[in-house]
Image (tube, rainbow, N blue to C red):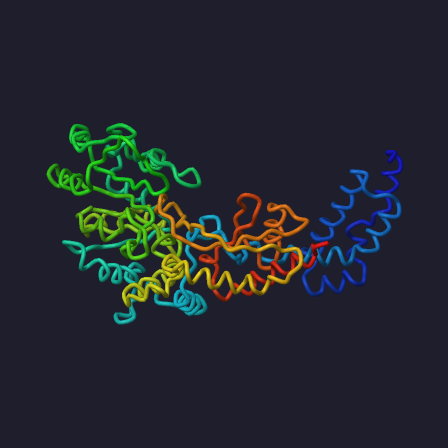
Length: 476
């Protein structure tokens, strides 16, 4: 298309002000406000100009676009005013999927959160005394009760916004200006470029590496201790494993060395399970109680991984050390709000009651493969007569995710689906573009859906979405 022709097409387009004077648009402006509608009109006109520039619109195409401007602006506005953060169906089989928000909250947590968030609360108010209180009390009492049986001495707990913050706060409070001894095999990087050496540098502590990548002995720690040493650090390798010719001192050895030399031991546990994971078929993943039972001085862990609660970083340990952490000015900058406390308190109460199935992540981990197969068969039966779909139920494995138990998998049954006329990647993209979006796996040319991570009440939505896609691509 000649440049002159494009210039003529551009001149035909109305201005934003002219679009806003259209009757249908003025009605929209009264409902949604001038600023939002004007921005939507700019976006629509901008797309039309891009189409002209690319040579994809001729004279009749531009006229058609102009005639449809009111509808296009309304669609653009509707899309712009929708929340970006949306609920999705996780059919990936990754229980603690970091990109999908990790642990879903328990129903009791949602109820308590709604109750606290929709009115005023006693977040920092002592009702009995009628004076200012401390926000820690709402969950510290529950942590103390949970750890009373396993810890040889009273345990205190503080909560910050995530485990990275917990590690930073612990290092800054206990080792600023001094050295922290850590094994080279534990200088990990987890998601979001969170690197232990860099966090340590930000904390004001100095890294003292010992051992080698695959072998570190207790003697290495002992030789590294000097008058500058403030902390011995153990970092759980939560998202990878070192196998083969390896060696690592037992946690009890490290604690014994710390007690002998008068140096605290802090463990970055990461995931933070509050139950024995062997009960759900996962071995080799230490829990918080294991570390406290071994007399680790301070343990840091997450709230939204194996604990099954909201995003939080938790530090539990010896009272005098946790008191030092709490008095750090950095604690106020990293503290959490009433929403986190409400969700965490309700989650911990489920542990107190030993109602573990009330916590969605734990319930999913405990789900037997037979129950997953029963649900997969029910979905399959609804779709067996759908044209264009091919469905099969296969053996498969679910994973914990969230940087927890990297080698552990759980037996599952997968619904393998193909759709005639669509590649597996195209089919998965259609699932993600549905309402609600469904996130699945793609392997060997098939879409795989693992219902372990799908809530039972969502099974019908999965079936409807698959049926809707197949109806648009019927078999020939």
